[in-house]
Length: 430
Ligand code: EPU
Image (cartoon, rainbow, N blue to C red):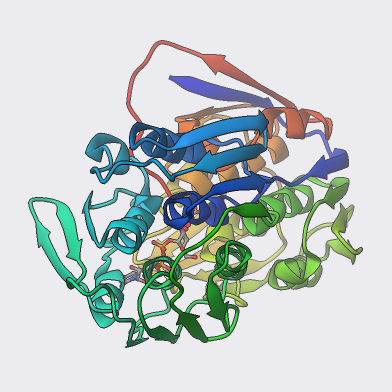
């Protein structure tokens, strides 16, 4: 088991550079299966979710060269028409993109149902609805999704999503790129990584338009060619450092961000009393006084992201007055509140609502990361708390945050990573 040991109470100061977006990378990497050539991909985050997907592709026969820690060359030209390792697939939610990618590339896919952070039921019915709309026959059996295109190939088609789903939107885009006809996705998700996937596919010769709006059009092309692409900065990693400065105090320049993607988070932190200044590709966050209470309702982009919900809860725990968070994306995403309460926070949870009464100080103790973003929240709480905080099960955190220790140390934090004898294994995330 690996732990982070944090000695809290030191303000954060300096500059931190944001890595490439996890949730863009985990879709773009499987999408390289569709490309008949070599993809050079820059700004790939060096995180364990990416390592896992690269291992899956490698075992399928992809040729992968790491040109630098964040630049990869991938050629899937010689990939065999084979199943992805189900043991690996079950360890990461984003492996569902292999269904769209294999269906598009080979005309059929058989992929184990994905794992993922436990936020309640996380069905993939909208992915299936989309694959059926573009002509595939889809069945579920023995924990596997089997999708088959008709002999004449995928036809394309129109799908109106019943819920705004990031994964379904991206998976249908991936599946439809090489279809014979045109696909229209209505009620599509609009997150920055949806636009990034479309830009990647278009850079390789696809014809995707409308990404970033709620109607996406994919005109099928015969083949995709190799090319170069650079992944956008990670909105949630940037937001996590912004929330950390707001909770802990200090003055930090967060660089390699797209400030527009941060609008909702910047607005909320300003409302709570932090000073947020935007530059072309950077954001400065300063916090000296006491934070004020606020309310948050999580929503699809451009609303407040569910993936920032635990981090903002730490800010609210240290704000004056009573704040309310309403989680509207997932059934249960408040498991971490019990851990924060152990540190002295005062949070009451009723199903999808958390009522947070601000306290003057959090106190260090041993807590565990229940999932990726909950883990990030524990780190922020530990940095803000007095005394020493031990965060357990940090493997979750390292699925999505590149070099978190050195980035925080660069801001003056006292945090170290220690290995202790193994106790529990970490389940799938994403
Ligand atoms: N939903 C359905 N049916 C579907 C798909 C989704 O009912 O077929 C529901 C879900 O149960 C949920 C809502 O629709 O209530 C939204 O789910 P979505 O499909 O958008 O989520 P996801 O694709 O499973 C991705 C990210 C999550 C992030 C969500 C929301 C990846 C690998 N995961 O999940 O990221 O929370 O979008 O933005 O991209 C994280 O990075 O920590 C993380 C959990």
